[in-house]
Image (cartoon, rainbow, N blue to C red; front, side, top):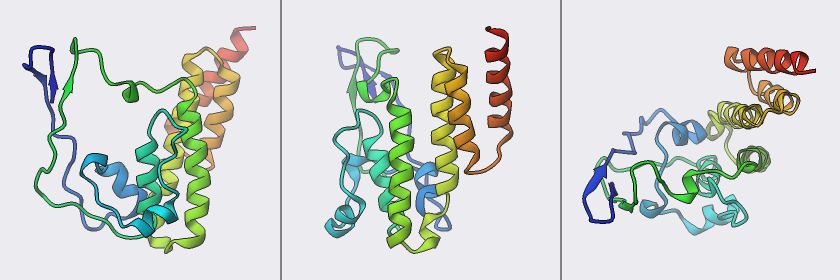
Length: 186
């Protein structure tokens, strides 16, 4: 719920969706992410996953939950347990954590890639489901960030890194567009 300074609700939405039991690992996190304020995790699992990365300004909880999801099955009750209220001065302003720092997407993708490699050494492979798609998405978004900054050569580098995790027409299209921008900007 987003409330204005007078306490009136200006918008609200249900963030979590029911989690299909067939989804495991990072694929489940992408489908229906857990909420930090409503999560219970065994201590040994948190320690294996490496705890929160306090150096991140953006998506530190998502990174931790991605790694935790590789270590075993998790779930959620069907009922709502948390109402999250955020007081805003206007509808368009948001939390600092919802506005990533310019290089946060790159750092997130890099740290998740490292984390998945660590988890793959200690996790049951069936819990690594969806890790490739999450990695593709992370590097693709990093490329998009550089594209927005007008740096197509760097964007291509990150788009190519995304292709390591699967060929997606969306990424191929962005590579072609970035190469054209680079060619015609000279």
